[in-house]
Structure formats: structure tokens, C-alpha cells
Length: 434
Image (cartoon, rainbow, N blue to C red; front, side, top):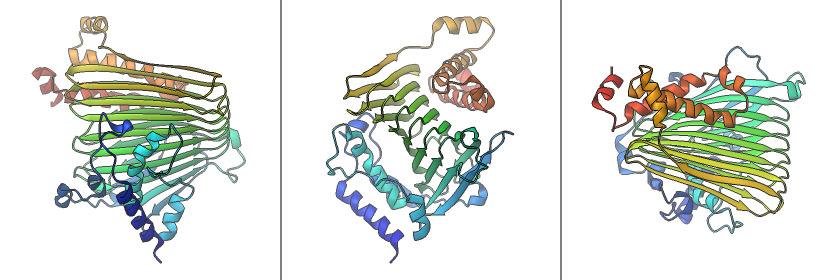
């Protein structure tokens, strides 16, 4: 019996039985995703597009060292989900998607809303990468072991469902830069991508995770990250994301181990396109912490949504949580939606949340112009400063940010955002194109 084929057919059956995400789904009501046929490659426009990029062209996942830093142990396995044995290894230990009629507890409604994405992924997944970072036979370095690495992903097909599994062993410190930047040498067609990432941190492990996702303008992208934290584990994520035809970044963190901590900072840049970030944090351990920050900048007719939902379970005493969401229109008439939300089921907690809308500071723009900068350069300088302050909240280590190519990634994204601004003066648009 072909177990891989049976698993794919079962996923399709469950998707058909459950149905796609309804338009009134709470987690997606401000920016509904395209229908299931798009993600399955069955939409009418999918028939006319084709792309089958080979890994030797740089498509798929590629793993690189980061700088000249000493490396710990990394076991990497590129797996073919069409092979039954490799598919079993790729999906080992991953929870099954929740069926909408599964009778989950209150507070899990957002997980139900996103479950159809997981069924589509199981039905379409063909390739994945599994990383095991640190281990017993890595010279017993334990808590002193540090791994620095970079992951790059290029589309392999016009419709794809890639997968990434990361296991950070007890006491290991890992620094990961993950980039998704479209390059012409791989697939050149508009891409539909449903990526699922599963991250597990062992006791006392730390992962500092910088993600930069800049899809093509016509791409439809949904990235789903699920993170589980063991006791005393710490997860820090910085996200730089730009808009496209549809772009969803969804992060779900289970702060399960006692004294575990999760921090997230998202910079969202969209000019006349769609972009949504969802950050859902669930506290189930004692004395846990979480911190969610987001800065959304939009222009033209863009739609930008930030959904932050933090749940403190009844058995999670002494939790400390914070949410701060900021939206700034940089031109035109974009639609900005900021939704902070706390769900608290314990009396012994410290919690704060808020959302603010505003504009780029006029006094800072004035002084920058007085120094001889044109308007675009002045705006870029101010946005970079705001973003640097944002990421300093996620990565509580200035040396860490300085050691990465962070400034280059940030400048590239901000420059592209200002270049794509349809409300920019004509002289600025000409300058952007040479």
C-alpha cells in the first residue's frame, strides 16, 4: 500500500469535508484568503502557468553558513514527501490539523479557522527540509554550543507547499537568518506558496530567528509557523515582510515550558498590495513571558492587517504579556487594521496591549530635508530608524543585530517600499528606475 498516496487522499477528503475558510471566519475576516482551488493548483489560471525549477538552479531550500563564526552540529535532511518512508520522517511528531467539528476548547477558534491551510498543505506537500541542531555527539558542548546559519528558499514550482522542521536540542543557542526573495534563475512565474514551518526548542534552548520575505507582486503566499517552547527556552523572531497579491504571515507560539519566553517584532511594508500578519501566543506554563511588536507601513490602495492574540491558560500563573501594534500610512489611502487581543484565564498575570495610528514625524522629515536629503531619502532614513528600534525590542542584544546583514536587508525592503509607492511624485519614481 502506498501510504504517501493514502495520506494525500485523506487530506483532500478532510478538506472537502470541512470546507474552505468562510468569509466570516474571525481570524481572516479583514483579508480573506483566496479559495482552496488556488492553493491546490486547480484554479483556471493555474493551467496556463508552469514552472519546474531544479534544485541545482538554487530552487528549494539551501543551507549556508553565516559569517566566520564557529559552528555547532547541524543534521540536515532534504526529504521527498512522495516517498512513503521519507514522508513519514518529514511529518514525524507534527500534530494533525484540527477539524472544524473537533470540539476544541474556547480560545482555539483561530486554530480552527486556519486548519484548511494545513489540509491543503498535506495534500500538496512534495518536498521538505528537516534540521536537528545540536546533539549528544557534538563534543558535549551543551549550553556553550552556538550555531549560526542561513536558510534561503526559492520556489520550485508555480504552486507549492514546502515544509521546514527545526529541532533545537537542550541548551543549544541558534541564530538563523531565513530569506524568501524571488530570483529569476528559479521559477519565473507568479507563485502560489503555502509554507509550513514547525519549530521545537528543548529545555534551555534559544533561537534568534530573522525572517525576510519579499515575494513577487503577483505572488500569493501564506507562511505558517508553529513554535513549541520547552522549560527555560527562548524564541526571538524578527520579520521583514512586503506585500503582494496575497501575503499572510502567521505565527503560533505555544509557551508551554515553565519560565519560557517568546518575543516577536514584525515590520510590514506594502504599497498598493495585500499583507497580513497574525501572531497567536498561548501561555500554558508557569512564569512565562511574551512580547509582540508590529509596525505596519502602507501606501496607495494597500490593505495591511495585524492580528495579535495572546491567551493565558488557567494553569499559567505569573505570566507577563505585552502587545504593541503601530500603523503608519505613508501615502495614498491604504486600509490599516490593527487588532490586539488578550484572553486571560488566570488572576496572577501582568498584561498590557495597545494599538496606535500615526504619520511619519513631520519635524524629523523637516530636519532631514534641512541636511540636504531629498524627500524619499529622508523618509527612508526615518523608517529605518523606526524599524531598528522595533527589532531592538525583539532581539535584546545589539551585537547580534550588528553581526548580521540586517542593515542591508532592512534598507533593501524600505527602498523597495518607497519605490513602489504609487503616490510618490513623478520625479521620485523616475529616480527609482534609474
